[in-house]
Length: 478
Ligand code: GLN
Image (cartoon, rainbow, N blue to C red; front, side, top):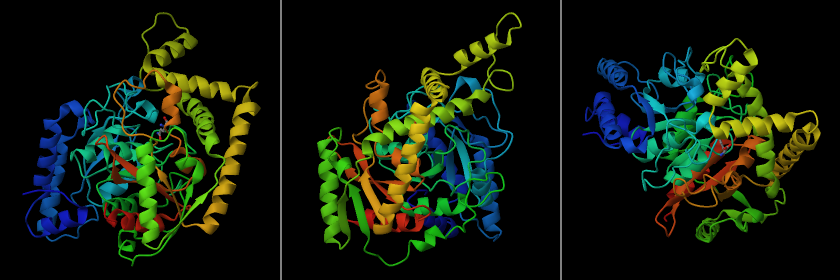
């Protein structure tokens, strides 16, 4: 009988002959079919996944060395290229596009024996916080189907939450892995900018984007990171630093950490009082366990969301200029030979409303008359944030905060208020602005019955401390 807890346990049961990769894949295919209304997958690679599982079972039975992710059933957010398979960024503009190469992260997964089960729904071009911006319909939160799963990697979060795969890869530009992980009650890890190659990831804002991991446990996230991280000739922004054996590092003895939190974050008027109370009670437990937890001033908090939205929309307006109806993707059917009209019609018909809004915002902040007032200013704020962050990490090992100021809202509840939706990113965008790693740990349950998470962040490339501390925190009794 197949039942999943962790990858390590799964491997033990495979080796004992208690289950097979085929049985695991069948089980997930069955679960996906049972709940189609979740809309987590845009496509399921049924035959292919079963064939690969059978081949892996055979290799194992022949005594071949097993990959680190042998038989691990993985889902990919629909912004990550998998050769020969559609990749659409949940947009009509790329609806019929097929990936011509593998993302480096996918290449690495496959080399370690992973089975890719399908392509997961998300907000169009990863722009959103609720998964309501997909051209292929919203994703539903498995704990309450009237609610959003968060975004933009909503399908990837729900797939792990509802047991539709073992782990998922998503992307996190301003919280798109951590925020849906919070709403769905799973682990969501965003590595340091430059830890994982972005080759084959459809770009939203290139100086922010990072591939991240959804998992049921810190252990599984650590193992997956160990596989997908590392230098890549195809992405010059990836660090050549050696990749630690994150999963083995987790076995290190417990440590006492110097933890900081931003006073302004916990005192924020937009923070749900029950979330604040849970985080405060948790801080008390941390100090009881011998960690030092210090409140520090972070007067820059009110600038992070505006700075993020100026810079990411600017980068998006540039990145998305390649979708013009000429080179690839959707082309409007217009009469006459006017090229500008073709661009206009293809982009107006192909892109959804939120993507159009962001392209326009980005074009505006980059325009000659406003460049200094918005773009340059935002770059300066980003620089100040960097300096402040470096200073904080000379005194502290980690920063904690709620991941999101509220729990999962109802589908449609915030659709008409983009600014309110943007403000919900207040705790997550900071890590992307400065490039540090962050994780959302599913530690809490709200009085309304919904899960929510604690965010932990550490210094650049200190995923070892991030994961070790996370393992310790998840072991603290509730
Ligand atoms: N919610 C944020 C946005 O809409 C984050 C998106 C992301 O991380 N891809 O930009």
